[in-house]
Length: 240
Image (cartoon, rainbow, N blue to C red):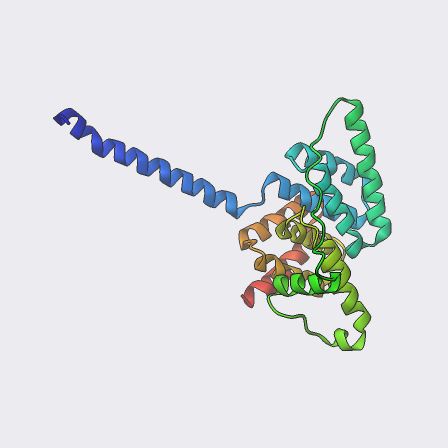
């Protein structure tokens, strides 16, 4: 190697270091905020929960354009019945059907996405749900409600966490983003909202992503709902 090439080595190494640093910085920024798909989940869940179908229609279109698949959105809408009730969930599903029909007429072909895998044949939905609930909470569930009303504990474990959360075509982070967004927009459910902020951290969501979620709520839904969510998140952060 001649002297000219030797002189260029420090420049080359400096350039490589700079490119690596830029890539790492970009990755850090991406981890600090919700992606476009995740932001769409926030709005879809929030407007399904409060029954604002015109705004839901708009955000369903935005979610498809952001890259959410048909089956991912269906999962969000189905999951919402566990939190907002069958009427709101069914209204959301029917709104989505209308959106897809309109897009098909325009020649827009949306990605279907994967179907959920079959639930384990060697486990009951309660067994599976108990495992998932424990994983999400970080420990076995406790509370007076379990002995006072054991039926609701069975339903939570078997149906919500087993039958619904056990469907693997929507990851736990996405499900928690949807749940937090719905609860934040419903009112009167702060204990559950606080619990799901904790679960959100347990499944790997960061404080910055939580704040990004609330900022979407503030922009799309309202300041009142966002302020309440910020307050509850603050309580969770004090205990972390």
